Length: 255
Image (cartoon, rainbow, N blue to C red; front, side, top):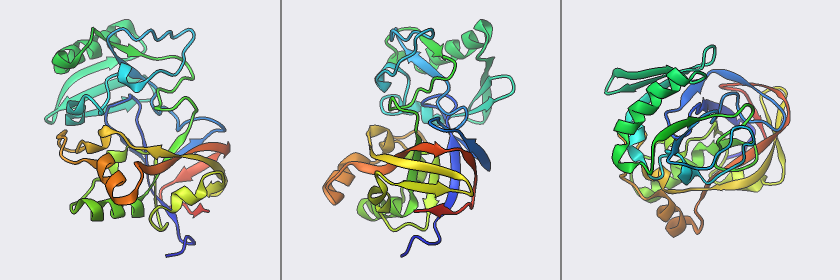
């Protein structure tokens, strides 16, 4: 397989860390920034020391997240950019809705997670946010990319289907050979007609990938499978936006 026909298959953002993805038909990338509204909020799992006035990167274990709180995958959430309202659904029914910019709205969401994740909490859950800050797994502002051929290779090793959303990436690419993304580290790639990303490093996978994004069940051992079958625990790469531009589903990917 060549890379000449590589395309953007899908684009996702995750407005609240650990909660459900939102598909995007198109979006705009800014230099050295995440996708708009990606990991814009997080839910603190007990006191973390996060200071909105001086935000800094912290280990993801300080927040509710799938690596330890797989029941989060049972929820479906929707985030409204215009008013920062988060709606939470469980089993097809809305169970909480709140404007995350207001104390009252945050309190509604916090009360829900205090009950939903009660036995997994280290303290009262708290909605966190700081202007311009992203609660990414890494300190640098990045766009995460998954090669769907690599996911297919993992499926072959596992012996059963592997949902690509287990990897919670921003951009999913078709048309690359399996593991081609690792050859791009240190290089720049084009997304769409004008955006360019510098690929900075592979993504080391954690136990969050063991959770089925549809059921919330921890039913696979993806990191162990990667190590056993391929000699590494990586799947996907992080890229930093080097040149701004619009991207959309079915756009060309140049590498």
